[in-house]
Image (tube, rainbow over all chains, first blue to last red; front, top):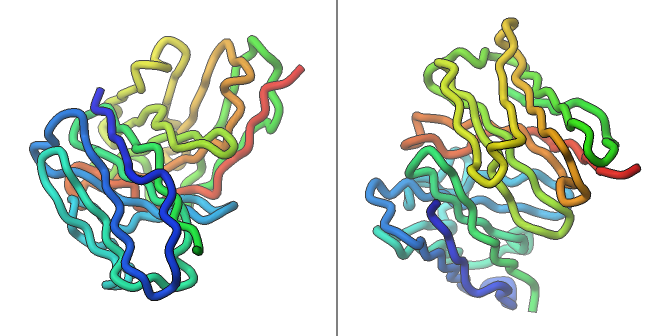
Length: 108
Length: 121
């Protein structure tokens, strides 16, 4: 089973700031099948990024994903008020899917 | 497509949790997609439970495999989750989710609204 470790646990930032979230895998995702999801309180998760760097349909271009192998990053270039939420990475590189524990982006 | 979970909101300890996911639009036999269950205890992260593909192939989370059964309905518009011998640790919101093979090996692009299941006597 591939373990995903997200850091930091909580990110305290202001609207307009740049957010950088990290996701590290316990073994290489050789095909780069890593996704990022956003979850707001009381809502289902929403797909933001798939294949490490491709934005899902309707996702604003302030969200970007990068990385390969074991190290991946989600960047939000300028935080909007609606971006304060919890973000999860997920690997779907093999038949056993796993999620990271989440990073909460909160208003400073 | 939209997904909707249904099933009892309360299950007694040691009994079996049963949930159904109904698709509005599309069928579970499409080879473009696969159909998963994911759960989330209150205030905690997401845990993948397992999935069934359009061809009927099934994979489970090894940590739950001994207690889980995922199946597809012959109507092709439903798939189900059964989790046996439940304890309080199984209390969570349960989501049914679509994996989309167009998005690489299948990122989760459609989520149900979630069904809260509490294990309590």
